[in-house]
Length: 196
View 1 (cartoon, one colour):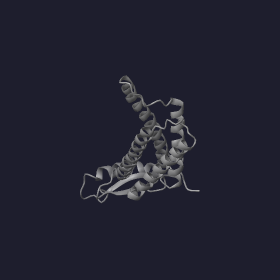
View 2: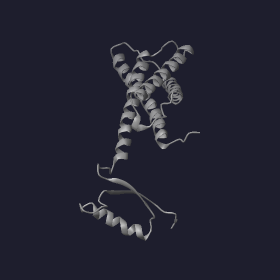
View 3: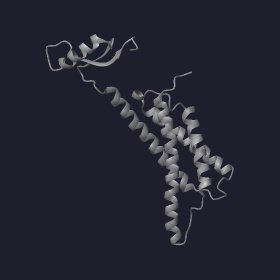
View 4: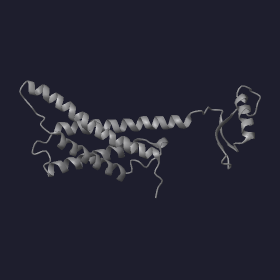
């Protein structure tokens, strides 16, 4: 079984939250717009909250299944590119299409199918999911490159005892001395087999 990383977990939770929040936001927006339309005599939005909650839950389920099934969470962030954007787009499109087919087939909305809701919901959710991937990739790449400069060598120090406590200040002060051979060393980790 493949190792499940915290990055994948974060992205799955982010996708679920995006789909849920965008669904609620779209519902509130259309209800508000319908209140304005109702003031002039034409009401288009008569879907209740329990039906809309069921719809959002089903859309989350289908999107999660397609995102997992198509491998939207099995990539390296440094290599995330057009192919991965396409996989995410296809998975979300299939998730929304299948869930809307489910709603139509089982007449969930009692012949009052809110097409405007689902179209705006789909495009907003897809845009937010792609945006979170772009931002997350930039954050991951930036975090992995923090502290790197073109001349620094990332270094692991074996042993975290008295000798390490003596060598760390020397390495830190070596950055200011152009003649010191340790000036390009960047300590990133210390390991020791002693638990104390």
